[in-house]
Every structure is written in C-alpha cells, then in structure tokens.
Image (cartoon, rainbow, N blue to C red; front, side):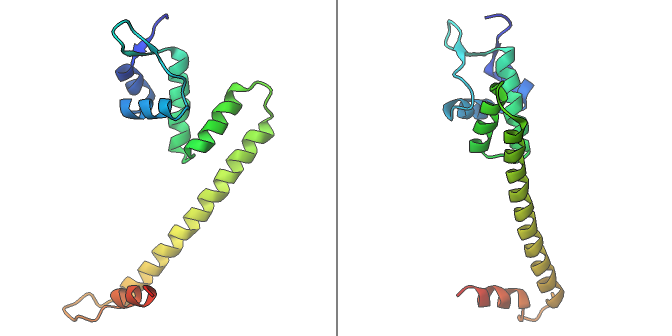
Length: 135
C-alpha cells in the first residue's frame, strides 16, 4: 500500500477525531482500514478523500443514513444528479423546518423575558408560562 497513513494522521487531514473515524468504520460509512504488521490502522489517499467527504456532509447536518446514501451515489457512476438533488432538497426542507421551530422558540422566550421585571419580586411570567404549559 503506497503512502498509507496512520489513524492519527488521517484524523488530522480529515478534521475528524480518531474515535469518529473508528465509529464511521463500524457504521459502514468507510471500508475497514488495512492494518500494518503491528496492527495499526492504515489509510490511503482514497480513504482520506472519503473521510473528508463524510466530514463535510456531517458539517452540513446530514444524518449517518443520509451520508450512506450520498456515499453510495458518489461511488455510483450510473447515478443521476436528480437523485442527489432530491436528497439534498429533502435535507434543506428539514433544516428549514427546524430553523423555523428554533425561531418560534426564540420569539416566545424574547416575549417572556420582556414581560419579566427581572427584579427582587418573586412573580415571574417566565416561570408562570412554563408552569402553565407543563400539564
């Protein structure tokens, strides 16, 4: 194997931890690495390319299942770009839904903090609201 690197170097070059590399390997996102005579994991340039792909997909919020699909499409030269676009669009829709939920939460908390005097009195509309929603 030419120019193979250890897991530490692979981690550094892919911006992933060694632990995450082993995890992705165990989850089937990456083929099991070759081993040195001493039993150390060894990674080729192709492996590093795959690790960087996984790292970039994770940074965009794709789930492990989605990354498996993306990797399969990436390796399939007979794929259609429509398949990739559809997967990406589904992810965009989910991200936008989550962003809207987060914005709603922030707006509710902003309103509650504006209603709270924030002084020495025990009355607190924030706690009152949380208590009224608990049932």
